[in-house]
Image 1 (cartoon, one colour):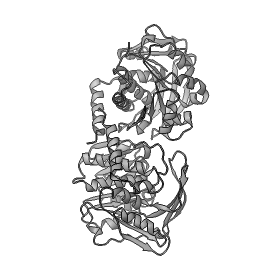
Image 2: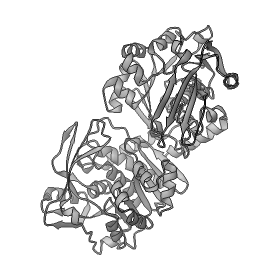
Image 3: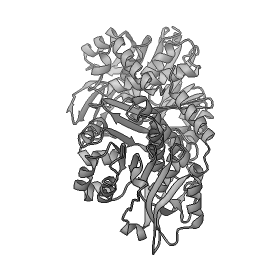
Image 4: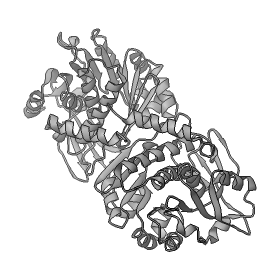
Length: 303
Length: 303
């Protein structure tokens, strides 16, 4: 169980509209995007909640991808539903409706096998819930966490308490700024590291990603995509590739390992935007991943 | 003269204000930033115009950096003066005043030695003037050109005529979109290549840069800088490093050479933002450049 990731986060139905079409209640949520990406590298267990309307085929689909759903509670009511759209430039998600439904009362419940997992990923949920889960995972050798502007504004104190016990934090540039008040990303990341995490990953969308670890500052570009269909879940897919690779590696604190993990994160997220929902990542084969990874890494090896 | 670059562009006095201080009529202009960067790699000749107020120390300073100023006319009146400021996030330059002065009547004049140059860089000026210079350079083996939204709006026809004869175009994302109406950068670059240039370089500020050449799409990150003091001229400094390296290379159409040139562009522009005006690039030593280049390239070589 040393290499198994436990992920706690949202399981959702997404209705998304972009210039290339739309979906109606397709499979989504941070825990789903993360799991489908991470499970390409290592076993994954999900802790989440769905309503009675959650389609059986979605459940089967996740299980076929070796994702353990024992921790996915079914509550009376409807599954979390997000409805949104993107403009031509795909810069910002425009929310049309957020129906939290059963997710509003989500109380993560862990069983014995969950607390044996070596790696924990706390997707973007209430930091008090994130902390509650973390406290049930004393054996976790790597704890990573995501958050969002909403929690930084409303529950900063809870978040800061949590961060003391977290190894690795995922943020975007705006969240880093919001957490620290510092505009320069390097300075901002250093300030966050003083709050607890020994590594910071900054997700920058089509500008790539940055890793701060020890004194190192590592920046890599996105893998350019000619037809972006739906960017929903790209950040969680990035985190899944990154964490999946790290969890499977013998020592995550190795800088070479971390740089490879960043590259897998970029590669997995580049697949995710190529189709709606989890269509692309859900049907990916290992040779497809390797081929794109090798191409990406080769281009960056400047001779 | 095969490796000598002729650059045509603005020579200016800049008054810039940022959170780290301000300058008053410091040395600036596209041709200046480009030349100081490119002259680290290859000989450079400037064609430009200044007023009678252009300080003698600035002229001496450029000459000491092996930049030929024979083509820099002095006209009665004042030198082009730009006054602007940047916000904390350094995203956008806010223009306070643009005094074109003698630059308004700029008519590039080439002498015999100019037309012998093997490489031409047409910095961002009126595309009709750019074309006038290009027509006097029949021996140029590499012609590159920069432009801006202003010319795309006001002189698109002239620009399109020019592009037919240009090997390499520098643009930013917005300009690429404006030229083609296409939002996806890969598709947009392919459309621009049909207009003439065989290579497109997209400058993306702190998101790095992209190169389109043949079927290749190459993306590299910026070199992260902890204290950005003044981003004025960073794009021209990038172009200078890129073109300087290409001009000195035996074959610019080689993909490895182009990728190295991109990296030198990134490295030179990372220096330029570290101080006001040309203070940092103007006093750079070759070992400083090599050290940062090696560090940058080494980080990107993912093992």
